[in-house]
Image: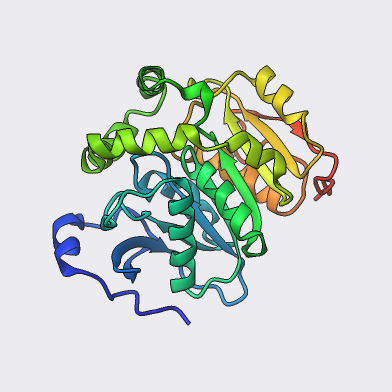
Length: 301
């Protein structure tokens, strides 16, 4: 059974809790391996499958909320700030990608969650890949949105330039969400985490994956190779990977295009063809770039 969600350090809560909630998901705290962990949770649905959203580099789960909230009516939703990020406490030593995957597993242990679908953005994607490698029996499906890391983001000055370019492509509201998170994360942590992120073999782990996986990339994302290169890489595997391109999107798709992303995730979860949402006739279009031979075939609604 899950532990008491109110068990946490009031020192952290008093310092970091905003004057009003940033989400219609419940804001809660728990204690995992001696670290205060802040998380958001949807109302419990007795028979609903669990979906856990993992944030990107230097950020908290706050920018994932627009998409997570749209899926919370169908999935028991968790959006944690991983240890060392956002409003959660800092562990004694900085965590690398495997360490963050273990921390995510311990958080789910604490919540009494045996199996979940994992949805990540940017750094959250390598964390998910490592989680799936270590605990495949605990993962229903994986959704990798704008997966970052690896040689395309090296060296650090290149990644900084990519991030700066992306900043001009994201909605203005993203600045007010991201800036406090980056400042709280700090410069020393940034260098350590960047090194760990670029050294993690994300591509190898993705090609090894045997779990149904959706990869969503933005057409204008400066942190990722172009669609042609993505398709070339995807064609190296006949596994369970489905790659979708979102027209006009940059890197923080979970924040900038939540309606389109939530629609794609729902279709993927139900093995339906990837199509534009007819409720939003003016929204950005989505295109399948690659569908692995062993991916579940789409079923018409």
